[in-house]
Length: 193
Image (cartoon, rainbow, N blue to C red; front, side, top):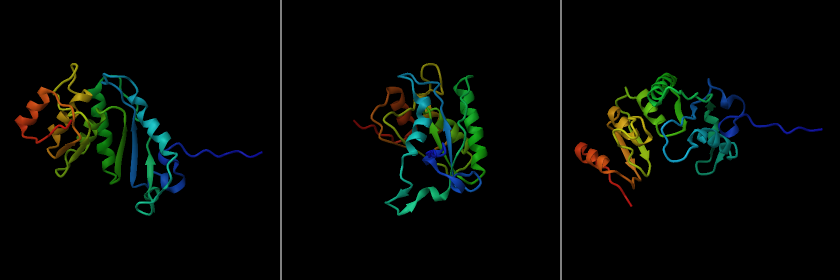
């Protein structure tokens, strides 16, 4: 009788030395947080779905002619969501990202909702050359939404508080409040339809 051996449960199903923390140059941090979504549930399942799908990817990248996984990609355990609220989750993510950044490895967060981005950026905000690229249909520049300054609709407003080098691409939906902020701060954000 033969048994099929399953791939390790990590990003791309990477085995052996290429998935170990100490030899990896990339860290994958799954953050299944869903605390401020307002239109349908399910973002908490994002990290698992991405990891599941990644295990079906080819390890060879024909465009660059390399097996990317050889740089070392380590998948960290899922970060347990805090039920105390989004402010606590943002602070926890910030602390974890700041610690991980000290390793010199590239950190990739898999979410979860947009709110996790606030913590990630805050965790590395002391670096003056920091820039953030947001690719999104929504500006996410509200000061508060549904009573929370940490809502998914406020992410880039919080990011811009700690990172002036933020660029937004693909915006097609922006509120009057957000446009007023853009004009007031001379951000140059343009919406498209």
